[in-house]
Structure formats: structure tokens, C-alpha cells
Amino acid sequence: MTMSSALSNAISGLNVASRAAGVVSSNIANAMTDGYGLREAQIVSRVTGTTGAGARVAGILRHEDAALSGARRVAEADRSGRQVETGFLSRIETVIGTPDQPGSLAARLATFEARLVDAANAPATGAHHAAAVDAAVALAAHLNDAQHRVQDARLAADGDIAEAVTTLNDTLQALSDLNIRIRKGAGGGRDISALQDGQAQLLDRISGLVPVHTRRDDLGALQVFTDDGLALLDGVPAQFAFTPVHVMTPDLAPGTGLSGLSVNGRATQTEGPAATVSGGRLAALFALRDDRAPSIQNDLDTVAADLALRLQDTAVDPTLAPGDAGLFTDGGSAVDAAAITGLAGRLQVNAALRPEEGGGAWRLRDGIGATAPGPEGRSDLLRAGLDALAAPRPVTTGSAAGQVLTAAGLVAAQISTIGRARAAAEMDLGHIAAQHGALVAEEKAQGVDTDAQMQRLLQIEQSYAANAQVIAAVQDMMDILMGIGR
Image (cartoon, rainbow, N blue to C red; front, side, top):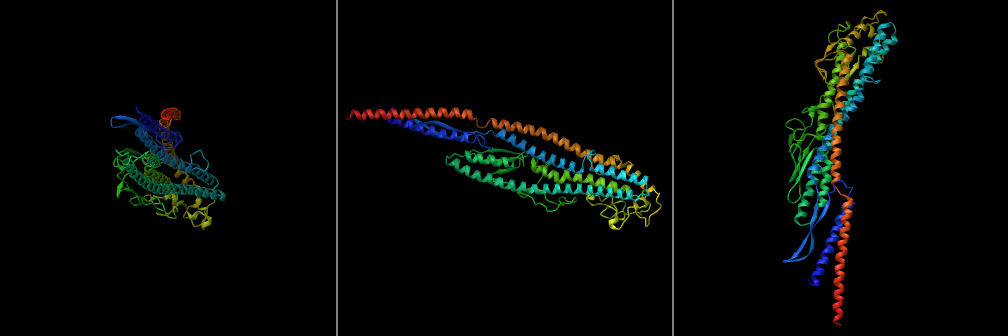
């Protein structure tokens, strides 16, 4: 080996060591960076003709466990979806309240019945009549508030869907833009690891919205698919479309005032056998807006209708004519059993009983249709109302349909349904969160090992020093040769 070849080899070794030190320092600096893929310098022999000419860095290899990252992202989508459902059920259960809570729906019904008992036991006491009317007003107001909270949750979900669609479109476009740069960089032999890190971070931005799987082509460009096989990024990004509403009412439903989801101009499903974007926060928001919240709304309407229909029966209050509104009204009118959608939000106490509206609480004793106070000792209508509330009646709508229940039994059944659903959702969320946590920990364990990188840095330092020593030795040899010629 000539001195020139020795010098060339040593210089190539210094260049390789310098480049490798840069890769290791990047790894150490990004040990805590989400989405960062461990780098490794690909060192190969440099050959000139048939003779070795040192070493060179052929490229930078970015380590990525696509299967593990994909599993973690799917788990993140499942967790986000369950959080939507659990959060909604917890909020609604808090609004309606459990039977043991003061001010709950069950407690307000019990208070109303207790005030009726007081009035029936002392029918001549006007204060008892007023207290019973006030309890009825509080009961109706509780149902009103519960319905408004359900509709608020639906409206918020509708807005969140619009925000999620915007995030998906923006992120998919950003991923596509990075793909263009990746292809150009790979074609020009440049390091594309940082661009792929950027894509990993973008994928994490949408992983909670939709469960996705990915793969890369020969040039390292990313392809993205939903768990159901819909291509979100395959050459060009998919385009999601959704139109939010500004006001939510109980009668709004998909196809009748509410927008569905479309991808590339075609309607798509978020649940069922034909779903192409199922799972994740996006699908959970649609389920909340279109299924879960309307189901609870129907249960509230069922309770409201049950209360009103029991007490507007002419057998309970003979002063009412068929079609007259009873103690509880639908915005002032009689309740129609065939038109109860949204009734919980419209339920009111009959103005005939409310002094502030020109009525009188004494009509609770003498009848809604009474034109003047009757005998002060009369209690038959009050007891008829109590009997009507305590009578088992068949339930034809809501989650308790098919059962025969009292008014209090129906309220308890509806509260129990919500409580069971919330408990089941929380249990599922716990399991999914544990799975997600395990996958996150496993993914981090495969990330940058700073101890291993420090050991690698020591090896690079030794290699650099050895190559520098070769250059120094060649310099000494050349100085000796130059001295001989003098």
C-alpha cells in the first residue's frame, strides 16, 4: 500500500466517523421526541476499480416497526372513541342524577308525589297545593334541562365532526406534500429520515380520529388506509366533506337536516357492515350524534309523555274534556302520545295551576277545568292523581318498551339503563387504555437507547483517533523522506 492510498483510506475513515458521530448525536438529542425513528449510518467499503479505497456512508437507515406503530395507532383510535362515549354518558348521568342524589329526576318525582300526599291529607291548606305545583314545575324543568343538555351534546359532536374532517383533510394533504419531497430526496440520494419523522408525527395527529394502517413504497413514500380498507393516501390524498349545523333540535337526523360524511364525493358509513371509516373518535362522534344521544332523548320523552298522559286522563280529572291538557302540557297543549319527539324539552305545568300566569293552585284539588274553588275538604282528585302515578302501565317507547311500570319505576328504569351503559363503556375504556399503554411502552422501548448510543459514540471516537493517527504517521514518514533529500 502506498502512502497516498493510506492517506486516502484514513481521510475516508475520518469522514465516515464524522458522519456517524452526527447520526449518533441526532439520536441522542431526539431520544424523547415523539415520532423520531432511530438512525443508523450504513457504512460500506469504498472500491476504486478492484482495489479497496477506504470506507463511505452509503446512506442513513431509519428504523421503524410499522406493525407495532400501526397497532398502537389503532389502539389510540379505539381509546379515543371510547372516551367520547364514556364522557357523554357520564355527563348525562350527572344531569339526570341517580336516585340517591338530591335534585335528581327520581328525587324530583318523589318530591312531587310527596307534595301531592301532603295536599291530599290536608286539602284545605293552600300552601300544600302551591308546594305541589312548585314540585311539578321543578320536575318539568329538570326534564327540560336534561333534553337541552342532550341536544347541546349532539351539537357539540356535530361541531367536533367538522373539526375532525378539517384536521383529516389538512393532515392528509401535508402527508402528500411530504411524499413528494421524499420521492425527490430518495431519487437524489439524500437522507429522507427527517421527512419520514414528520409523517410519523402527522399520522399521530389523526390516529385518534380514524384507525389507520400504513406502508411505504420503494422510494419511502407513505400510503395510508383505514382499518376498513379505504385508501386515505395512495398517490393523492382523500378528500373528506361534512356540513355542520348551527342549531340542534330533537327532530334532526341524518338525511333530515343533519349531514353525513362523504369521501371523494361519495357518501360513506361509519358503522355497520358497509362502514369504510369505522372505529376511532370520528365514528364515535357520529354514533353519539345519531344514535346514543337520540336514544337517551327518546327515553326522556317517554318519561315526559308517561307523566303527562297519566294525569290528563279524564278518569283521573273528570273536569277535563277529551283533548284538554292535563297537569303537564306540551307547551300548553294536550300531549299527543303519537308525537312525543322532543316532549321532554317542551313539558310545562298547565297555566291554569300557576298564579303567575293567571291560574290557581287550588285547581290541583278541584280539577284543571274547574271555574271556581270547590269544597275545601275534597281530596278525591288528588288521590286519583296519586293512584295514577302509582299504577303500572305498559311502556311502548324507549329502552323500557315492553315493560309494565309505575311512573317512578319508569324513571328508575331509564336511569338504570344509562348507568349500565356508562359502567360498560368505562370498563371497555379501561381495557383499551391498558392495551394502548402497553403498546406505547413497547414502542418507546424500541426507540433510542441512549446507553447503546453512548457506547457507539465511544467506538466512533476511537475510530476517529485511529484514522487521525494514520494520517500523523504518514506525515512523519513524508517528513523523513523529505529530510533524506536535503
